[in-house]
Length: 438
Image (cartoon, rainbow, N blue to C red; front, side):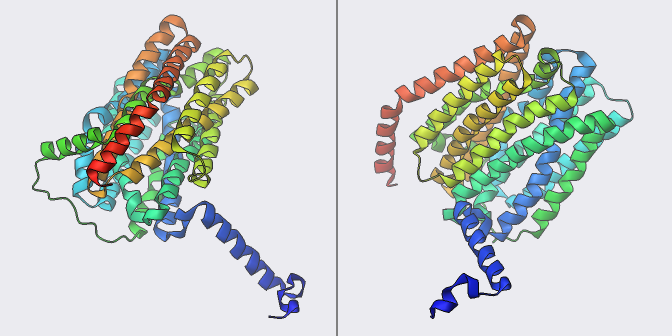
Protein backbone atom coordinates (compact mmCIF):
# COMPACT_ATOMS: atom_id res chain seq x y z
CA UNK A 1 0.00 0.00 0.00
CA UNK A 2 1.32 3.45 -0.88
CA UNK A 3 2.06 6.14 1.65
CA UNK A 4 -0.65 8.32 0.09
CA UNK A 5 -3.24 5.64 0.62
CA UNK A 6 -2.30 5.45 4.30
CA UNK A 7 -2.39 9.21 4.85
CA UNK A 8 -5.75 10.20 6.43
CA UNK A 9 -5.54 13.59 4.75
CA UNK A 10 -5.87 11.92 1.31
CA UNK A 11 -9.02 9.99 2.25
CA UNK A 12 -12.54 11.20 1.47
CA UNK A 13 -14.73 12.60 4.29
CA UNK A 14 -17.05 9.59 4.02
CA UNK A 15 -14.18 7.16 4.45
CA UNK A 16 -12.85 9.15 7.41
CA UNK A 17 -16.25 9.15 9.10
CA UNK A 18 -16.53 5.40 8.50
CA UNK A 19 -13.08 4.79 9.94
CA UNK A 20 -13.83 6.93 13.01
CA UNK A 21 -17.18 5.18 13.50
CA UNK A 22 -15.60 1.74 13.27
CA UNK A 23 -12.87 2.78 15.68
CA UNK A 24 -15.39 4.02 18.23
CA UNK A 25 -17.45 0.85 17.82
CA UNK A 26 -14.37 -1.32 18.39
CA UNK A 27 -13.48 0.59 21.56
CA UNK A 28 -17.08 0.34 22.80
CA UNK A 29 -17.18 -3.43 22.25
CA UNK A 30 -13.78 -3.81 23.87
CA UNK A 31 -15.06 -2.09 27.01
CA UNK A 32 -18.59 -3.58 26.88
CA UNK A 33 -18.46 -6.89 24.95
CA UNK A 34 -22.11 -7.75 25.70
CA UNK A 35 -23.26 -5.07 23.25
CA UNK A 36 -22.00 -7.27 20.41
CA UNK A 37 -25.14 -9.39 20.96
CA UNK A 38 -28.31 -8.13 19.23
CA UNK A 39 -30.41 -9.93 21.84
CA UNK A 40 -28.65 -8.10 24.65
CA UNK A 41 -29.03 -4.73 22.92
CA UNK A 42 -32.79 -5.32 22.62
CA UNK A 43 -33.01 -6.42 26.24
CA UNK A 44 -30.92 -3.46 27.43
CA UNK A 45 -33.08 -0.91 25.63
CA UNK A 46 -36.41 -2.30 26.79
CA UNK A 47 -35.31 -2.96 30.35
CA UNK A 48 -33.84 0.48 30.99
CA UNK A 49 -37.13 2.14 29.99
CA UNK A 50 -39.06 -0.24 32.21
CA UNK A 51 -36.70 0.28 35.15
CA UNK A 52 -37.04 4.05 34.94
CA UNK A 53 -40.77 3.47 35.35
CA UNK A 54 -40.13 1.19 38.32
CA UNK A 55 -38.18 3.93 40.06
CA UNK A 56 -40.99 6.36 39.35
CA UNK A 57 -43.29 4.10 41.32
CA UNK A 58 -40.85 3.37 44.15
CA UNK A 59 -40.18 7.04 44.82
CA UNK A 60 -43.80 8.12 44.35
CA UNK A 61 -45.02 5.34 46.65
CA UNK A 62 -42.68 6.37 49.48
CA UNK A 63 -43.66 10.02 49.07
CA UNK A 64 -47.38 9.20 49.01
CA UNK A 65 -47.16 7.13 52.20
CA UNK A 66 -45.17 9.87 53.95
CA UNK A 67 -47.76 12.48 52.96
CA UNK A 68 -50.64 10.25 54.09
CA UNK A 69 -49.14 9.24 57.45
CA UNK A 70 -46.25 11.61 58.24
CA UNK A 71 -44.52 8.55 59.70
CA UNK A 72 -41.05 7.17 58.95
CA UNK A 73 -42.26 3.84 60.36
CA UNK A 74 -44.98 3.45 57.71
CA UNK A 75 -42.55 4.40 54.95
CA UNK A 76 -40.34 1.55 56.15
CA UNK A 77 -43.30 -0.83 56.42
CA UNK A 78 -44.41 -0.10 52.85
CA UNK A 79 -40.89 -0.61 51.49
CA UNK A 80 -40.69 -3.87 53.44
CA UNK A 81 -44.03 -5.15 52.19
CA UNK A 82 -42.89 -5.11 48.57
CA UNK A 83 -39.82 -7.21 49.38
CA UNK A 84 -41.29 -9.68 51.90
CA UNK A 85 -42.46 -12.09 49.13
CA UNK A 86 -38.87 -12.39 47.92
CA UNK A 87 -37.93 -13.94 51.26
CA UNK A 88 -40.63 -16.60 51.10
CA UNK A 89 -41.19 -17.20 47.39
CA UNK A 90 -37.78 -16.79 45.74
CA UNK A 91 -36.86 -20.46 46.17
CA UNK A 92 -40.03 -21.50 44.36
CA UNK A 93 -39.26 -18.84 41.78
CA UNK A 94 -35.84 -20.38 41.22
CA UNK A 95 -37.37 -23.81 40.60
CA UNK A 96 -39.77 -22.27 38.05
CA UNK A 97 -36.88 -20.50 36.31
CA UNK A 98 -34.88 -23.73 36.01
CA UNK A 99 -37.89 -25.67 34.67
CA UNK A 100 -39.56 -23.44 32.10
CA UNK A 101 -38.43 -21.12 29.27
CA UNK A 102 -37.14 -17.94 30.86
CA UNK A 103 -38.38 -15.70 28.06
CA UNK A 104 -41.96 -16.93 28.56
CA UNK A 105 -41.66 -16.42 32.32
CA UNK A 106 -40.50 -12.84 31.77
CA UNK A 107 -43.31 -12.03 29.35
CA UNK A 108 -45.89 -13.15 31.92
CA UNK A 109 -44.28 -11.44 34.90
CA UNK A 110 -43.76 -8.13 33.10
CA UNK A 111 -47.40 -8.15 31.95
CA UNK A 112 -48.64 -8.78 35.50
CA UNK A 113 -46.40 -6.03 36.88
CA UNK A 114 -47.82 -3.63 34.31
CA UNK A 115 -51.38 -4.46 35.37
CA UNK A 116 -50.63 -3.89 39.07
CA UNK A 117 -48.99 -0.52 38.38
CA UNK A 118 -51.96 0.64 36.30
CA UNK A 119 -54.38 -0.43 39.05
CA UNK A 120 -52.46 1.56 41.67
CA UNK A 121 -52.40 4.60 39.39
CA UNK A 122 -56.13 4.39 38.70
CA UNK A 123 -57.00 4.01 42.40
CA UNK A 124 -54.78 6.95 43.33
CA UNK A 125 -56.17 9.24 40.65
CA UNK A 126 -59.70 8.27 41.76
CA UNK A 127 -58.79 9.40 45.33
CA UNK A 128 -59.62 5.93 46.66
CA UNK A 129 -56.11 5.02 47.72
CA UNK A 130 -55.51 3.95 51.33
CA UNK A 131 -52.54 2.47 53.18
CA UNK A 132 -54.06 -1.06 53.08
CA UNK A 133 -54.56 -0.76 49.30
CA UNK A 134 -50.94 0.34 48.83
CA UNK A 135 -49.68 -2.51 51.02
CA UNK A 136 -51.71 -5.16 49.17
CA UNK A 137 -50.59 -4.00 45.73
CA UNK A 138 -46.98 -3.68 46.90
CA UNK A 139 -47.15 -7.23 48.26
CA UNK A 140 -48.57 -8.60 44.99
CA UNK A 141 -45.89 -6.79 43.00
CA UNK A 142 -43.31 -8.39 45.27
CA UNK A 143 -44.80 -11.81 44.58
CA UNK A 144 -44.39 -11.28 40.84
CA UNK A 145 -40.86 -9.99 41.37
CA UNK A 146 -39.85 -13.11 43.30
CA UNK A 147 -40.12 -14.99 39.99
CA UNK A 148 -39.16 -12.20 37.59
CA UNK A 149 -35.89 -11.19 39.24
CA UNK A 150 -34.13 -14.59 39.18
CA UNK A 151 -35.52 -15.12 35.67
CA UNK A 152 -33.88 -11.89 34.51
CA UNK A 153 -30.54 -12.83 36.04
CA UNK A 154 -30.64 -16.36 34.60
CA UNK A 155 -31.82 -15.09 31.18
CA UNK A 156 -28.58 -13.12 30.76
CA UNK A 157 -26.68 -16.36 30.10
CA UNK A 158 -28.96 -17.00 27.10
CA UNK A 159 -28.46 -13.53 25.61
CA UNK A 160 -24.66 -13.50 25.35
CA UNK A 161 -21.69 -15.81 24.90
CA UNK A 162 -19.93 -17.03 28.03
CA UNK A 163 -16.96 -14.68 27.53
CA UNK A 164 -19.42 -11.76 27.42
CA UNK A 165 -21.25 -12.76 30.61
CA UNK A 166 -19.24 -10.62 33.03
CA UNK A 167 -19.91 -7.57 30.86
CA UNK A 168 -23.60 -8.47 30.60
CA UNK A 169 -23.95 -8.74 34.38
CA UNK A 170 -22.25 -5.39 34.94
CA UNK A 171 -24.33 -3.69 32.23
CA UNK A 172 -27.49 -5.26 33.64
CA UNK A 173 -26.60 -3.64 36.96
CA UNK A 174 -26.05 -0.38 35.08
CA UNK A 175 -29.68 -0.57 33.90
CA UNK A 176 -30.85 -0.51 37.48
CA UNK A 177 -28.49 2.30 38.39
CA UNK A 178 -29.00 4.45 35.31
CA UNK A 179 -32.71 4.28 36.00
CA UNK A 180 -31.98 5.12 39.63
CA UNK A 181 -30.43 8.38 38.38
CA UNK A 182 -33.16 9.31 35.92
CA UNK A 183 -36.24 7.78 37.56
CA UNK A 184 -36.22 9.64 40.90
CA UNK A 185 -35.51 12.96 39.19
CA UNK A 186 -38.44 12.42 36.81
CA UNK A 187 -40.56 11.20 39.72
CA UNK A 188 -39.91 14.38 41.69
CA UNK A 189 -41.00 16.53 38.77
CA UNK A 190 -43.95 14.30 37.92
CA UNK A 191 -45.22 14.29 41.51
CA UNK A 192 -45.06 18.09 41.53
CA UNK A 193 -46.87 18.41 38.18
CA UNK A 194 -49.43 15.59 37.98
CA UNK A 195 -49.26 13.83 41.33
CA UNK A 196 -48.29 10.36 42.45
CA UNK A 197 -51.12 8.73 40.49
CA UNK A 198 -49.62 9.94 37.23
CA UNK A 199 -46.24 8.47 38.22
CA UNK A 200 -47.86 5.07 38.85
CA UNK A 201 -49.57 5.14 35.44
CA UNK A 202 -46.29 6.10 33.75
CA UNK A 203 -44.66 3.07 35.34
CA UNK A 204 -47.42 0.83 33.99
CA UNK A 205 -46.91 2.14 30.47
CA UNK A 206 -43.13 1.72 30.69
CA UNK A 207 -43.53 -2.08 30.76
CA UNK A 208 -44.61 -1.95 27.11
CA UNK A 209 -40.97 -1.34 26.12
CA UNK A 210 -39.59 -4.46 27.79
CA UNK A 211 -42.48 -6.62 26.58
CA UNK A 212 -41.87 -5.54 22.97
CA UNK A 213 -38.11 -6.15 23.39
CA UNK A 214 -38.69 -9.64 24.78
CA UNK A 215 -40.92 -10.55 21.85
CA UNK A 216 -38.18 -9.47 19.43
CA UNK A 217 -35.43 -11.47 21.19
CA UNK A 218 -34.64 -14.81 19.58
CA UNK A 219 -32.76 -17.42 21.63
CA UNK A 220 -32.16 -21.11 21.17
CA UNK A 221 -34.62 -23.30 23.03
CA UNK A 222 -33.14 -24.20 26.39
CA UNK A 223 -33.70 -27.74 27.54
CA UNK A 224 -35.50 -27.42 30.88
CA UNK A 225 -34.93 -29.47 33.96
CA UNK A 226 -37.28 -32.44 34.29
CA UNK A 227 -40.66 -31.14 35.41
CA UNK A 228 -41.26 -34.47 37.15
CA UNK A 229 -38.74 -33.71 39.88
CA UNK A 230 -40.45 -32.75 43.14
CA UNK A 231 -40.13 -28.99 43.86
CA UNK A 232 -38.92 -29.63 47.41
CA UNK A 233 -36.12 -31.82 46.11
CA UNK A 234 -35.20 -29.18 43.53
CA UNK A 235 -35.02 -26.54 46.25
CA UNK A 236 -32.98 -28.84 48.49
CA UNK A 237 -30.52 -29.56 45.68
CA UNK A 238 -30.10 -25.83 44.98
CA UNK A 239 -29.55 -25.02 48.66
CA UNK A 240 -27.08 -27.89 49.00
CA UNK A 241 -25.12 -26.82 45.93
CA UNK A 242 -24.87 -23.24 47.20
CA UNK A 243 -23.95 -24.18 50.77
CA UNK A 244 -21.24 -26.67 49.83
CA UNK A 245 -19.64 -24.23 47.39
CA UNK A 246 -17.33 -22.23 49.71
CA UNK A 247 -17.22 -19.04 47.62
CA UNK A 248 -20.94 -18.98 46.93
CA UNK A 249 -21.67 -19.63 50.61
CA UNK A 250 -19.38 -16.79 51.70
CA UNK A 251 -20.88 -14.34 49.22
CA UNK A 252 -24.43 -15.21 50.26
CA UNK A 253 -23.70 -14.84 53.98
CA UNK A 254 -21.95 -11.51 53.44
CA UNK A 255 -24.77 -10.26 51.24
CA UNK A 256 -27.24 -11.19 54.01
CA UNK A 257 -25.54 -8.83 56.46
CA UNK A 258 -25.27 -5.98 53.96
CA UNK A 259 -28.86 -6.46 52.81
CA UNK A 260 -30.21 -6.01 56.32
CA UNK A 261 -27.94 -3.24 57.55
CA UNK A 262 -26.53 -1.60 54.42
CA UNK A 263 -29.39 -1.05 52.00
CA UNK A 264 -31.99 -0.02 54.58
CA UNK A 265 -31.01 3.66 54.47
CA UNK A 266 -32.73 3.93 51.06
CA UNK A 267 -36.15 3.61 52.71
CA UNK A 268 -35.35 6.64 54.86
CA UNK A 269 -34.30 9.04 52.10
CA UNK A 270 -37.81 10.55 51.82
CA UNK A 271 -37.67 11.22 55.57
CA UNK A 272 -34.17 12.74 55.35
CA UNK A 273 -35.23 14.91 52.41
CA UNK A 274 -38.31 16.30 54.12
CA UNK A 275 -37.36 16.45 57.79
CA UNK A 276 -33.58 17.04 57.69
CA UNK A 277 -33.13 19.24 54.62
CA UNK A 278 -36.67 20.58 54.20
CA UNK A 279 -36.83 19.44 50.57
CA UNK A 280 -39.89 18.79 48.47
CA UNK A 281 -40.54 15.94 46.06
CA UNK A 282 -38.03 17.14 43.45
CA UNK A 283 -35.32 17.55 46.10
CA UNK A 284 -36.00 14.02 47.34
CA UNK A 285 -35.56 12.78 43.79
CA UNK A 286 -32.18 14.53 43.64
CA UNK A 287 -30.97 12.59 46.70
CA UNK A 288 -31.94 9.29 45.11
CA UNK A 289 -30.32 10.33 41.85
CA UNK A 290 -27.01 11.21 43.52
CA UNK A 291 -26.68 7.71 44.93
CA UNK A 292 -27.80 6.28 41.59
CA UNK A 293 -25.25 8.29 39.64
CA UNK A 294 -22.48 6.91 41.82
CA UNK A 295 -23.87 3.41 41.34
CA UNK A 296 -24.02 3.86 37.57
CA UNK A 297 -20.41 5.02 37.51
CA UNK A 298 -19.44 1.93 39.50
CA UNK A 299 -21.07 -0.56 37.13
CA UNK A 300 -19.19 0.84 34.12
CA UNK A 301 -15.99 0.79 36.15
CA UNK A 302 -16.54 -2.88 37.05
CA UNK A 303 -17.25 -3.83 33.42
CA UNK A 304 -14.04 -2.19 32.17
CA UNK A 305 -11.74 -3.39 34.98
CA UNK A 306 -13.01 -6.95 35.49
CA UNK A 307 -9.65 -8.64 34.89
CA UNK A 308 -7.43 -5.89 36.27
CA UNK A 309 -8.52 -5.62 39.90
CA UNK A 310 -8.88 -8.63 42.18
CA UNK A 311 -12.44 -9.54 43.15
CA UNK A 312 -11.72 -9.42 46.89
CA UNK A 313 -10.11 -6.00 46.65
CA UNK A 314 -13.08 -4.63 44.68
CA UNK A 315 -15.63 -5.99 47.16
CA UNK A 316 -13.88 -4.94 50.38
CA UNK A 317 -12.82 -1.56 49.00
CA UNK A 318 -16.33 -0.92 47.74
CA UNK A 319 -18.00 -1.74 51.06
CA UNK A 320 -15.62 0.45 53.06
CA UNK A 321 -16.11 3.32 50.63
CA UNK A 322 -19.88 2.95 50.89
CA UNK A 323 -20.00 2.73 54.67
CA UNK A 324 -17.65 5.60 55.47
CA UNK A 325 -19.32 7.88 52.92
CA UNK A 326 -22.80 7.08 54.22
CA UNK A 327 -21.77 7.86 57.79
CA UNK A 328 -20.35 11.16 56.54
CA UNK A 329 -23.67 11.81 54.76
CA UNK A 330 -25.52 11.69 58.10
CA UNK A 331 -23.33 14.54 59.40
CA UNK A 332 -23.74 16.73 56.30
CA UNK A 333 -25.42 20.05 57.05
CA UNK A 334 -25.89 21.21 53.48
CA UNK A 335 -27.50 19.60 50.44
CA UNK A 336 -24.43 19.83 48.10
CA UNK A 337 -22.22 17.99 50.59
CA UNK A 338 -24.95 15.42 51.20
CA UNK A 339 -25.24 14.79 47.45
CA UNK A 340 -21.48 14.30 47.18
CA UNK A 341 -21.39 11.71 49.96
CA UNK A 342 -24.39 9.88 48.48
CA UNK A 343 -22.60 9.76 45.12
CA UNK A 344 -19.45 8.26 46.69
CA UNK A 345 -21.46 5.77 48.74
CA UNK A 346 -23.28 4.63 45.59
CA UNK A 347 -19.94 4.22 43.84
CA UNK A 348 -18.67 2.01 46.66
CA UNK A 349 -21.76 -0.10 47.19
CA UNK A 350 -22.30 -1.02 43.55
CA UNK A 351 -18.61 -1.67 42.94
CA UNK A 352 -18.93 -4.38 45.56
CA UNK A 353 -22.31 -5.75 44.51
CA UNK A 354 -21.75 -5.77 40.75
CA UNK A 355 -18.53 -7.67 41.37
CA UNK A 356 -20.20 -10.20 43.66
CA UNK A 357 -23.10 -10.77 41.25
CA UNK A 358 -20.75 -11.28 38.31
CA UNK A 359 -18.70 -13.71 40.41
CA UNK A 360 -21.79 -15.76 41.27
CA UNK A 361 -22.81 -15.88 37.60
CA UNK A 362 -19.37 -17.12 36.57
CA UNK A 363 -19.12 -19.78 39.29
CA UNK A 364 -22.54 -21.43 39.04
CA UNK A 365 -23.39 -24.35 36.76
CA UNK A 366 -26.20 -23.54 34.31
CA UNK A 367 -28.50 -26.32 35.58
CA UNK A 368 -28.46 -24.67 39.01
CA UNK A 369 -28.43 -21.07 37.74
CA UNK A 370 -32.08 -20.20 38.40
CA UNK A 371 -32.04 -21.68 41.90
CA UNK A 372 -28.70 -20.19 42.91
CA UNK A 373 -29.68 -16.75 41.63
CA UNK A 374 -32.98 -17.05 43.49
CA UNK A 375 -31.09 -17.84 46.71
CA UNK A 376 -28.73 -14.93 46.12
CA UNK A 377 -31.60 -12.55 45.38
CA UNK A 378 -33.71 -13.94 48.24
CA UNK A 379 -30.93 -12.97 50.62
CA UNK A 380 -30.21 -9.66 48.90
CA UNK A 381 -33.80 -8.48 48.53
CA UNK A 382 -35.79 -10.74 50.82
CA UNK A 383 -33.90 -9.69 53.94
CA UNK A 384 -34.33 -6.00 53.17
CA UNK A 385 -37.70 -5.93 54.98
CA UNK A 386 -35.88 -6.79 58.20
CA UNK A 387 -33.60 -3.83 57.71
CA UNK A 388 -36.48 -1.57 56.66
CA UNK A 389 -38.49 -2.49 59.76
CA UNK A 390 -35.50 -2.01 62.05
CA UNK A 391 -34.44 1.33 60.63
CA UNK A 392 -38.03 2.56 60.69
CA UNK A 393 -38.34 1.71 64.39
CA UNK A 394 -34.89 3.13 65.26
CA UNK A 395 -35.65 6.30 63.33
CA UNK A 396 -38.84 6.88 65.31
CA UNK A 397 -36.99 6.45 68.63
CA UNK A 398 -33.48 7.81 68.08
CA UNK A 399 -33.68 9.86 64.89
CA UNK A 400 -33.02 8.92 61.28
CA UNK A 401 -29.35 9.96 61.24
CA UNK A 402 -28.47 7.84 64.26
CA UNK A 403 -30.37 4.86 62.83
CA UNK A 404 -28.41 5.07 59.55
CA UNK A 405 -25.09 5.34 61.42
CA UNK A 406 -25.78 2.26 63.55
CA UNK A 407 -26.86 0.18 60.56
CA UNK A 408 -23.81 1.24 58.57
CA UNK A 409 -21.49 0.38 61.47
CA UNK A 410 -22.75 -3.21 61.38
CA UNK A 411 -21.92 -3.33 57.65
CA UNK A 412 -18.36 -2.27 58.47
CA UNK A 413 -18.07 -5.05 61.06
CA UNK A 414 -19.23 -7.60 58.46
CA UNK A 415 -16.55 -6.37 56.05
CA UNK A 416 -13.88 -6.69 58.73
CA UNK A 417 -14.96 -10.25 59.49
CA UNK A 418 -14.75 -11.04 55.77
CA UNK A 419 -11.18 -9.71 55.66
CA UNK A 420 -10.24 -11.79 58.70
CA UNK A 421 -11.64 -14.94 57.05
CA UNK A 422 -10.07 -14.56 53.61
CA UNK A 423 -7.31 -17.14 54.12
CA UNK A 424 -9.76 -19.75 55.41
CA UNK A 425 -12.09 -19.04 52.49
CA UNK A 426 -9.24 -19.44 49.98
CA UNK A 427 -8.23 -22.77 51.52
CA UNK A 428 -11.81 -24.04 51.45
CA UNK A 429 -12.14 -22.99 47.81
CA UNK A 430 -9.00 -24.88 46.81
CA UNK A 431 -10.25 -27.98 48.62
CA UNK A 432 -13.63 -27.70 46.85
CA UNK A 433 -12.01 -27.24 43.44
CA UNK A 434 -9.84 -30.32 43.91
CA UNK A 435 -12.73 -32.49 45.12
CA UNK A 436 -15.14 -31.27 42.45
CA UNK A 437 -12.58 -31.34 39.64
CA UNK A 438 -13.19 -27.68 38.81
